[in-house]
Length: 185
Length: 185
DNA sequence: TTCCGCATGTAACCAGTTACATGATTAC
DNA sequence: GTAATCATGTAACTGGTTACATGCGGAA
Image (cartoon, rainbow over all chains, first blue to last red):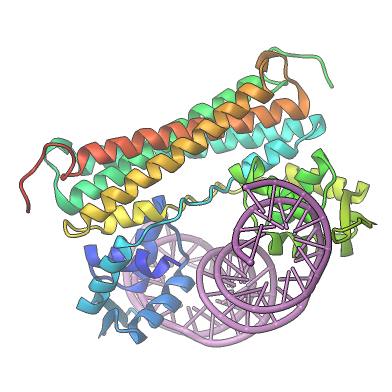
């Protein structure tokens, strides 16, 4: 119950096409909410029917026409009203944690490899966030308004990734089969 | 695509009824995967049709009959095969982060209150995890096998909750309107 | 010539949520 | 009497995923 709000948030920051929103979701917004392009097109159509957004069709040479979506005052008001509502604590979902809990000694070797792979991917993600922080928010003490909020969300993403990296290291160190803990079974 | 695996994991640790599984999901397993009782009953029926579990009906006096589900060897094998498959990095979803990003100065007061509420709830959750750690895993260095895995998952939950608490504090400190930063608009 | 990026969508399916229904026992 | 706990389920709906479809321009 929040994809339309996530899209409205993105459009409040800047108008854009469905395609372009999908890419924004892959990057910055995807840090805390994700959506595929199909979902986004479907939701944009509903939002337009509800009067939250309007679209302007723009013809292009060589490329398909595109529709630029803009948040309407009604959409902005609906977004503000939603922000004022309480939010549930989000349910954490970790497939890797389920696998860890389900693993017996026979699955441990492949699980170790998978954990190492997750570690790499999280490191990449963290590096991207840190680069972003450096590039976009050089002077955090002076941030205000929307920019400050964006920065704080990014800080959350960084903190969580760092924690998860640390946890993955702890798991690799504690599970048998690492380094020099020999002895099969 | 993993609820049946989460249920199988729970049943591998110990057989149980649908009702009882729902409560386990609310507690320990809910730390990284959640499900309502309707979802669980529905999925158990499918798992039984697929031969992953068997059920024994137990008549009770005064209370409705209950069905105790047990993982079959086939279910156990399917679970092990699934553990060996790679897992996607899970998509983080944070409604609160979307709200923070969407908030303008007009919504800040209610958002601050909401963040404080989340802080409290996370603190409660962390306290519960820490109590659990103390009670169930007094001697972590000696853990092996399934118990070690359970412990490591719990450690992950603790680390994430601590990080999020720290983040919420950072947000409250950075947003205007806190303590002594007066001056409206 | 093959792949990637731009740009939009339909259709079918699967998973998750919410509401409703039943009914006895036990504790307050 | 009122609410909570035990125990199972149906039905309708909403949201998310996967597969398929189209087609041009530019780069390798």
